[in-house]
Image (cartoon, rainbow, N blue to C red; front, side, top):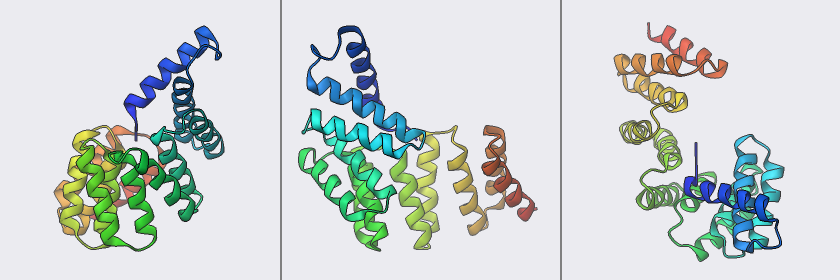
Length: 215
């Protein structure tokens, strides 16, 4: 999933600026965006330690960078430090009360605490603030599945697929739900789409197993 596309673009500009002029002449806020961008890149490849270091640097350079605190919260979620994560995410929201990704991450914390109502409220707020935030649709769909609200889960995944039509993960998740509700033709179409989109073993094996089960 791609997040903070505008921030990443600004970060790329910041990196270019630093490279061209050196750090002494670059405002701290711009260098903070470069560190945020570096953290997102590290997060994408699964290097959470380097991501954390970059986010820490970003918030030191710009203590008002709400996205930096939100991402620090996300890293803490991955380390199962939910108290630390909540502290960082609430700090982000105190700076920017309309930061959609922060509500999405706080929703994950609510799920871990079995606060279903709180999680649904946070995911809904994330989607209201950013209707293109695929992560929030996917996270809410998973919660709907746990609550056996499968039609609501399908609605969210329909929205997610429309936003990211090249994601095998989304088609696989939607295919699973179609199987559960008995929409076997639609499940087959989604699972075949998974095979058309990727050759990654984890997706291919699962999709083929599910297709064999349907048939």
